[in-house]
Length: 75
Image (tube, rainbow, N blue to C red; front, side):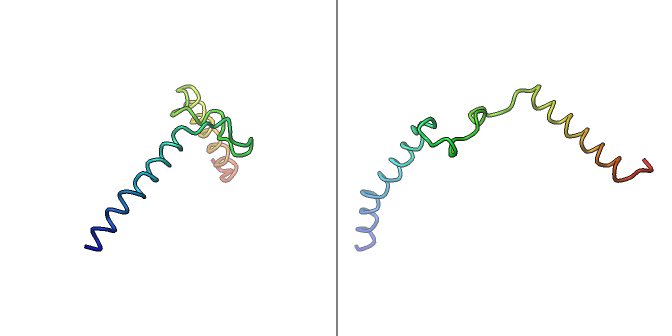
């Protein structure tokens, strides 16, 4: 009986509290945050643009090639 009462109290008090927190988190407005706590401007985008992703990969390859050529002068 005590366990049933605990489960009922959890359902009455804790579940609505958790659901309310999730709803508040979803509806939070980023512009209300202080400047230092704001996410970067592009953070709202799920994926970078294709050309930006390609440029990043190409730049990364060039950096790796330059690093390896500095490490192994015989190459």
